[in-house]
Length: 100
Image 1: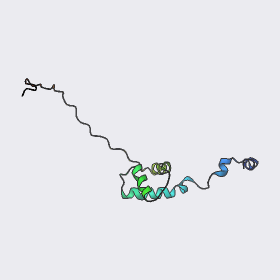
Image 2: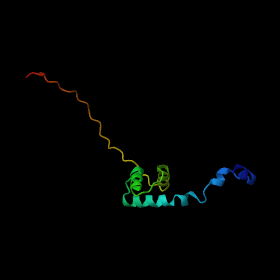
Image 3: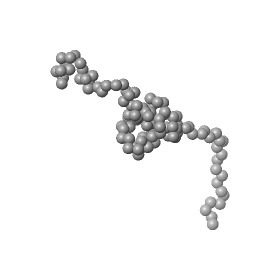
Image 4: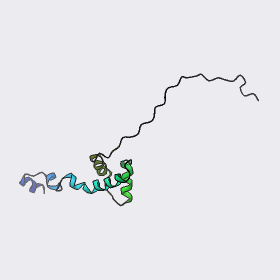
């Protein structure tokens, strides 16, 4: 194999590389993800990943994440509401402690 590639002056990686662009290879994953996100747009990648696993789609999680980010489906996380700062008030101790 390496001699044949050397004779043709072709790298072994170029010989073994599958034909077609990444978009055509990822088309099935992208279609499945967009179908899920149309149903519930607030789902993050792991919720979509679990749902695809339930539907017998056994793709690698890195492949799904790449397709998810390519389609810009990733959503920003919600931030917590800020509570206004309050003035600190010292606690008042009772004069009668544990008397009963």
